[in-house]
Length: 130
Length: 130
DNA sequence: ATTTTAATCGCAACATTGTTGCGATAATAT
DNA sequence: ATATTATCGCAACAATGTTGCGATTAAAAT
Ligand SMILES: [Zn+2]
Ligand SMILES: [Zn+2]
Ligand SMILES: [Zn+2]
Ligand SMILES: [Zn+2]
Image: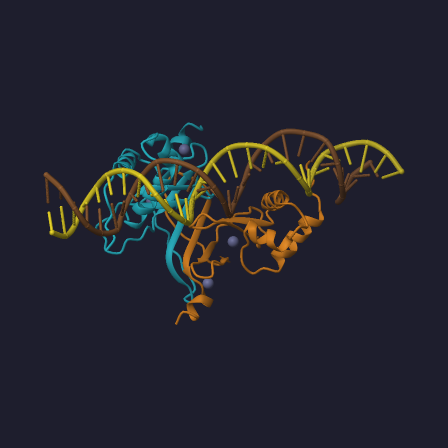
């Protein structure tokens, strides 16, 4: 019964997520963490937080990986079926919790997870682009 | 007017794509190419083929990158808005040309590209799993 | 409060993936 | 046949992620 422990590094990572409105990459977290813990430790903390459904992993169109807090903790089955938006200009990635794709897939496929990422200009960059 | 040239390496890569029903990673292509050309050359060929809309890039949930042939060459505007299926067991990635997500997004976002990847069990692995 | 257990950590070493610069090569137009 | 330049090979580098293992340390047990 692997119990997950609360460590200084994990607490720091959680606080960083708490203060961020957008998704964060490993590199961005490491920059904020400084030398509080090792690179590898951050990777392992992220892995644990994903397994515990506290954060979820987001893979962008360009292959970059980021993580964001999970909401909807009330639900029994924890599926991250919302969309993500990736801004081409400011490079920020945000959860669009309310945007969920509908689709029809052949019955002989079994879908366990989906990744729906939209790329373009976010509201901020769209305004400053006029 | 940068003209694109036909080289032995490019021809070989195109033939490999022609013989494959699933998407291919750089590593998989390199394995088939052998020492016909350098690693870097394969990267550059893939980049060119993407720019020429001959293949398209697919980023999986786990961050792995693959490429697949483009169809629908008749269309003037070339958008890869179809879904991709990633099998958790055999790790193959296939284009689902007919599966296109519908969604509603706030008007203050400008969408230029989408990535819709489904993950689970493909028909082959679903059968052999019973 | 002290001991015990094992989850977590730091560090080093490694693997994979992708990029860049530059002189050499070769495909294509003239 | 010659000129132009897209493409190539090679080396070097950067970013990202993984693994093994002995040392720590959070949390449970006493
Ligand atoms: Zn933006
Ligand atoms: Zn999200
Ligand atoms: Zn399969
Ligand atoms: Zn496709």
